[in-house]
Image 1 (cartoon, helix red, strand yellow):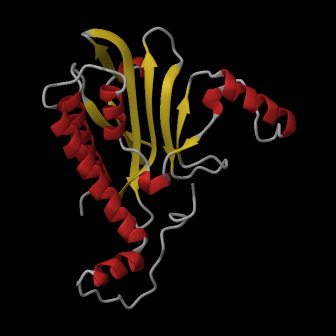
Image 2: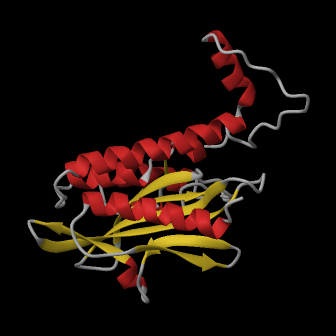
Length: 235
């Protein structure tokens, strides 16, 4: 059986290939032991050195932070991302522009996977300000829009790194490598296949039902099927 360290190193190489296929610049994505897990990130001694540079017209204007904490799932067999953090930082200040976060063990009532947008809009601040006056226990920071957690599909259907990269290229205009689309599509397909396999393990009866409807012969195992905890209900 392939060890967690080996699986994490393979994952790091896959991410390295995708990022280098899309973004220009010199950087290395590595897998580093972190307590009983591994973190996949850019190689670098300091936090600022662990970000991937983003260029527009050859000018370094922002950085992409990528951290994915990997371990084994509850079965102890399969690789699982327990936490991930993606963020775009301007070179002008330390405050992120946008962040996408995921925590499989989120226990604060926030969605497992969510966006934070560090921006301002008067109309939304007005709504939150009025809500704060009525429900201060819910709306605690009405003038800090980055405190909102915008849900994005939960554990299985959240955006992947490739989605984030395509947003940066298509919507933010960052420089990209020639042939970037092929690298991005390959990485996304690999991610979605991996997520689909995890979803099938979570929802085996639904998977067997669909396959049976399409002519497959599927036999139910002689054991109780354990449904993935919260996969259908947690936001």
